[in-house]
Image 1: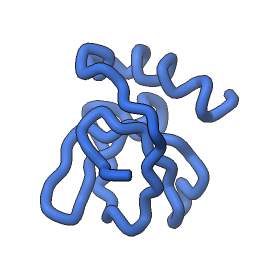
Image 2: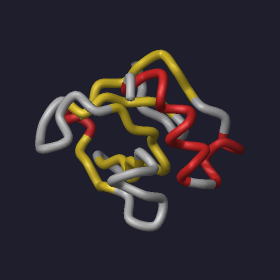
Image 3: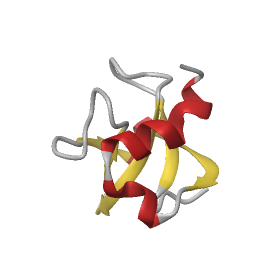
Image 4: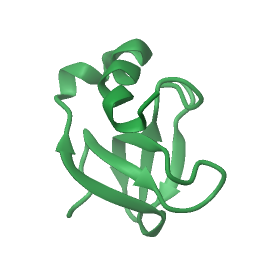
Length: 80
């Protein structure tokens, strides 16, 4: 599965392992990811593709405008 903007991904490595994020932007071999809580829109995490596992879900670009909307969209994935 290709990692694109709006894609829901799962971290495979690091302290955020097994947590779901949404991809805000893609740049070369890196993706900017956000979960709306620990990693907000203002301070996204830069992570290499090899440390991410893409899901089949892609969120609408309109949902990526606030941290609250991102948390709500990811709540079903993270089971919080």
